[in-house]
Image (cartoon, rainbow, N blue to C red; front, side):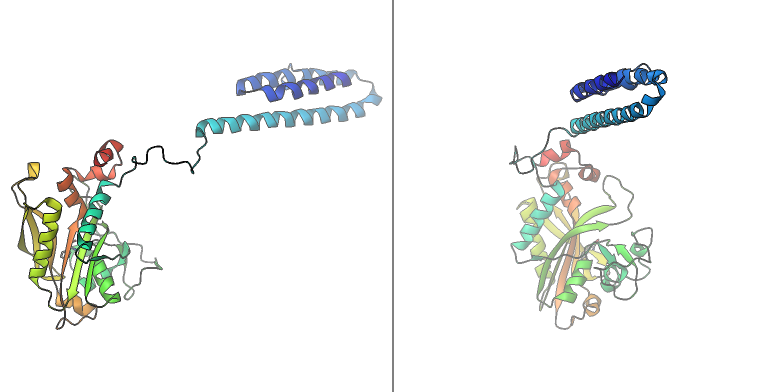
Length: 346
Ligand code: PHE
């Protein structure tokens, strides 16, 4: 019986490393430890062994069983590793050069953002930033937006839980946190940090509780502009926006300012533009941004003397401009990450 046990062990030692599929392994395992397997059969002979030989034989059986079971474990481990490697595919070397360096492109929204920013940089604006999480004070109060303004409603803005404390967003008092509904918050944060002359452009993500449709998204992007100095006038605003519109939509574009209202600018305007070569959108006035002269109440909230300084501000939706420039008629395409859409902007 000892010899048989040694033979079985030798067989397992020789054959186990050559097993490459689970099915082969299971079949082989059955020939050893299955109900009719060699090991099982040999152990049945134990009954016929003389009493005095039993203890030694018992120890040998246990040892052989132990060795066989570790050999089988090693096979399973090896098969599992191979299966995992199969699922993961070929090994990747992250240090290799890109096969096609032109394959990746900036997202179309980022492309337009970069274009807008670079046009304003060229005329002396620098980029400012603030957080996407804001507080009611910086999003509304400091911008002269009254307490009963609809944007403050829970239905219009995303408020954060009131027990939250956001370490990197300073509060004015104990007011609520929310996701900023516009980039005008950057006007306030910048004016509190810097003193005039201030000339900034602030691109960023904004959030509103809009029901998504072809022209609305709960998450969108704006570019804010702010210029504060002595003697800044409406003429400066008009000239700057004219330059911008002609640079981005072509020299034949015309602009107009239409009276409007924002709590943080006075007077306030919507800027429209008109272009003869915009395909379907040609030859009609298209609204592209809100703007106006900084309201004296806003200057007071940040400690700038409105008797000494004046300023203008504007804010535009990047998606809106991108859709016009790129001929996209549904805002939702921008967020679906469909490469067939994205590749068109390479
Ligand atoms: N914040 C305004 C909006 O989101 C846009 C705006 C910015 C208007 C600056 C005037 C001045 O609609």
